[in-house]
Amino acid sequence: MLEGMLLLLLALGGGKPGSPSASVASAATAEPVAGVWRGTWETPGADKPVPVEAIVSAPSKEGRLLAVFATGTGRAKRATRVTGHLEPDGARFALPGGGTLRLAAASASRLIGVVRGVGTQSPTPGDGTLELARVRR
Image 1 (cartoon, rainbow, N blue to C red):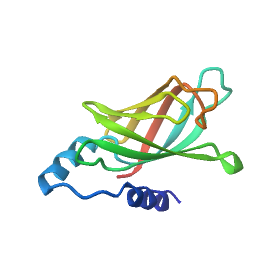
Image 2: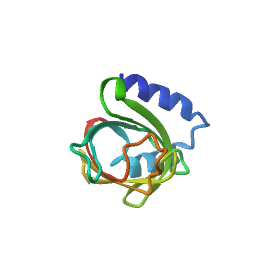
Image 3: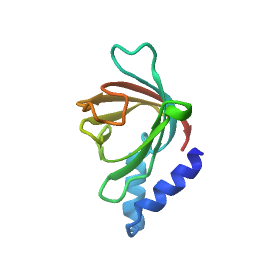
Image 4: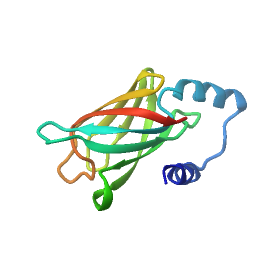
């Protein structure tokens, strides 16, 4: 299912590809965050962390990223599509309903995320932290 979502995400990205040199530079800087990830989303006061799956696309030549985050399990599972941009040491995404998600590489196979400013009407679990392990590049 994740691979299908990734293909859909990449198809929705659209746009004209950049020059070969531009795409090589963008891919090199996005290496730490682009890919398929799985882990947990912890919020203060929650009994246990929420399972999360994430697909982060390779960036455009301007450094724009697309991502899909699926949180929860079974019938309670929700998918959220977000846009963001590369930063020198990771990526930042704007969340629907307010708030931001900041991802940074802890290693080649691990991402750490910090979520702040999530509104009460947001489809995401809320302010907290994410720990993600790479499933696929």
